[in-house]
Every structure is written in structure tokens, then in C-alpha cells.
Length: 397
Image (tube, rainbow, N blue to C red):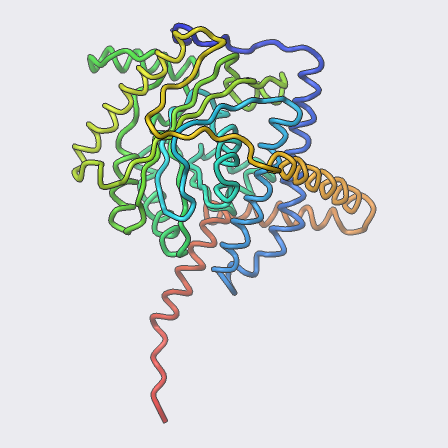
């Protein structure tokens, strides 16, 4: 069974108006990310080698500013409504955030959640994503330069990648909050079928609202961040959809479909509350996911018009504050204007075709040569560190 009892239907058909909205959203994302990569990110590339710290800080802020565009459009043209409860994520402390992965759009809507808590979180958040997304022209390039962690969903392949990226985060001196989906994939029909078979073979409880978590990556990240002294909090994030399930980016693009009522609840834990041993962390995560299954069951068995994720005493409700909605729409307008200007510039001025080919050559070349711009930056940073270590100190004359 793909859908849990009480879950809303999976959207497979929409009308012309929804398809137009989907086309507008996708064109805005494609062109703003592609042109932004060409005209903002690419000219900054020398900083990778000359001033790595400047590079990291500038890219974090520029990409964070761009993230307001997709999250803002979700509310502006799709009228997405969010209910956000729980604990505020602290952008000043390094942390790990773990979330159930109901659809492939969870991370997109989570940007709206973070914006309500603190817009700075769009700068300090990092995400673990499927490796194939890094090849998307524009958006994939930008997420790569922003040092998002692209994984192949194979622990053997990903172990070294995770370790090196966490070391890089720690060396920057900045506090990042890293979003991890312990289930490893979204709860699509294929993944659900695999989970049912896996649970039968291992004689595990059959879940209806979540997938059994893959514990190896979670344990590695927690223990490595502890080793680096780079984790103070863990945030347990639960997402639920009240009116519709839109499974993937393809459905958003092709159908213009989005859920309209999304619930997030965030629970903050001091990392010292988690077990010290690997085995203890495995048991802790499995127990947490069992409780998450029951929380979602309680949510979906409530009447649709009054559904709320249960939360804890002292939790907050996060809504747009003061002029934040106006600021969000204003930034969307800025990106719309800049994208139109870039499009005109590309069309009207000579040699833009050569610049486009150069941009594709640099970004795609970096992906094949290094695994992405982020790994080029990491290698350059390591090279500078080694050079400094090997430089003999000057002696007094």
C-alpha cells in the first residue's frame, strides 16, 4: 500500500491554470538560476584560489538570497499555506536536522519553514541531495557552488564524501545546519514496495507513513561532527501534507501541482542527549522513527479541517513577522527584474553565446574533473593550507 490511511490523494491530473502556473515557476527557476550562475557566480571563481573565505561567505549569501525566489513563488503564485510549530532553529550553532521524506519536494517547502523562523537560515542551511540533481544546469550548479552535499545513495561511495565535506564545513569557521533525510529516498511507490519487502525479510514493523531509516549515514554524520566539535544541536523535523501529495519535481513542472496545506513541527535536542556509541545511535534513530510513524498516524486520523501535528509544551508557532511577507515578495520582484534584464542583455549584446559556452564548459568540466565546483573549492582550500604549513617561518635579521 503506497498511501497511509487518511493521507490525501496523489495528484496525477490538473487543469490548464495549474499547468500555466507550473510553467511560470519552472521558467523562473531555470532562467534565474542559469543566468545567475553565468553572470554572478562564474565571475567570482578567482576567489576560490585567491580568497577562499571570501568565496564561501559570498556564495552562501548570494545563493541564500536566491532561495527566497522559489520559496516566495510557492506562496505567491501557488498560494501554499504553512503551519510551522515547535522550536526555532538557531543559525549561530552548527547542527544536524533530520526529516521524514514523504515527497521529493520536502526540502523546497522547508525553505518556507526556515524563512518564517529566521531568514538567515536560508544562508546557513546545507542539504544532502541526490547526486543526479547536481547536473541540472543553473540550479544544480548553484547548489554545488553552495556546497550542498550530493550523495549517490551508496554508503560505500558516500562515506568519504560526507567526511570530507563535514571537515570543510568545520574549517570555514561558519556554523551550518545540515539537513539529512535518514530514509535515503522519498516515500514513492517503488520505495514503499522495497520497504515492505525489506520489513518482511527482517521481520520489522510495517510502516505506513514513513520508510525505515538507513542508519549508517546518520551515525557517520553525528560521530564525525562530534569528532570535529561541530555539532551542538539536533533538530527532529516532521512534515505532513493535509490536502494533496505531489510526489516529485516532475509533477510540479508538468502538472503545476503543489500541496496547499503543509505542516512542519521542529523539535530541538542538545547533542549530549543522544547516545555516545554507534549502536546506541542506531537504536535511538529507529525508536525516533517509530514515534514519528505514530505522530503521523495521529495527524492523518484527525478530521481534515482540524489536523495539527502534536507538539510539545513551550513550542512556538511561526508565521510571517511584521513586513517579512512584503520583503519576500520584494525579493521575488528583484529576481524577476534581474532575470528579465539578463535575458535582454544576453540577446542584445555580442559574444554572449561564447560566454554561455564558457560557463557550461567550466561548470560541467568541474563536475567531471572534480565532482563539482564545491570539490574544486575544497581542493583549492586544502592546497592553500598545505602551502602555508610547508612555508618555513621567517627568521629575524
